[in-house]
Image 1 (cartoon, rainbow, N blue to C red):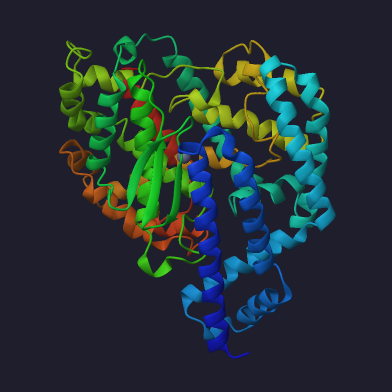
Image 2: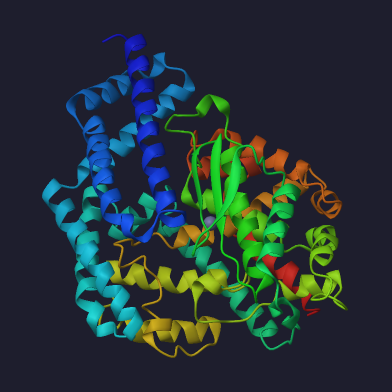
Length: 498
Ligand code: ZN
């Protein structure tokens, strides 16, 4: 094999993978938007063929030889191809490390566990889910050994989701979150904020117009990104040339879809900003789940919930909803969309309390995987941490330990990346302020300088670098949780006049 031929082959392989992902993604998107109810079985047959084919084209001796050849000849490759080969080899090893029969058994277990979890959650019946949870934990402990036999099991799992962010990084991170944010929340939680006007009637056709306006202000290129409607908002992309976001409109909750659009719009901007040269290849998407979440939360919270942004968009909102917002000032609106309130449900949490919800899960799954907490003790431990960190009493397991789907889906070590996204975003804000007049330009409704910074430092690189390295390059300093707690402390101290 010559290097020239190997490069040609690895580019062709990636183009094929892209084509499969494109077709499968399109079928998925259709299934949650347009497809009629009775179409699932027929679609399932097609997906089965596609995914089997996709697997066979990737997991075989020829591809393995090709990837090892490229690794051994790394010095002769350009930086992009070298990284593509590295990422593909990582993916390859990930797919083949777990023995086939264990992988199949795990899929069967997850399938069952998810069905049981749905019912258990509905009935708030933890005992029903408990035996499955126990098996899922055991399987994850074994998988951790396959991922990295030398690492602590929970570290090996964490590394699968956000590379480089193991307990030696996350323990001090969450310790700082706890030390700064738990007392801050205690100080603000009983201060009343009037937000009743957000829950008046906001007709959906007008909310759709607001979505268009928000996407315009964010500078989202509608020739390459459109918006649909689904039960749960999400972003899916097939390349930087075809990105889709979705939202869900609630007639009696204006801020719900508004901030979904800004959040998903942040994900979309990341994809739209990746370099042309990376398209159709293994690097043509975000660097990690945490970094993707940093972009959505940067736009949703740091920009979208800032006083400057509300000043810029409030005239647009009142134009659409003059009656609902009569007598409401931009400042009232800004206060209302930032109302901090301890709650039971992570997905409904505000900017200040969000990471406390994640911290509960981090501490518990760490102990579950370590074996220092049993599934019998889990609900009581969950409830105790909610009382300690958020000051709320968990009313039942449906709104407690059974609320998230992640564990039933077999995922342990996933949660921290949600919180890291917010922390990365805050660190980016402080770095950006050194080069860009963030508040000034946002207040004028001009997001271009902010976007240009993010494209230059983050977006265009796609998956070229690992998350830790990319963040450090962008911010000129390694990851440091102090920016996140400082950002929140400054914001909520001012907002609540503490
Ligand atoms: Zn997101």
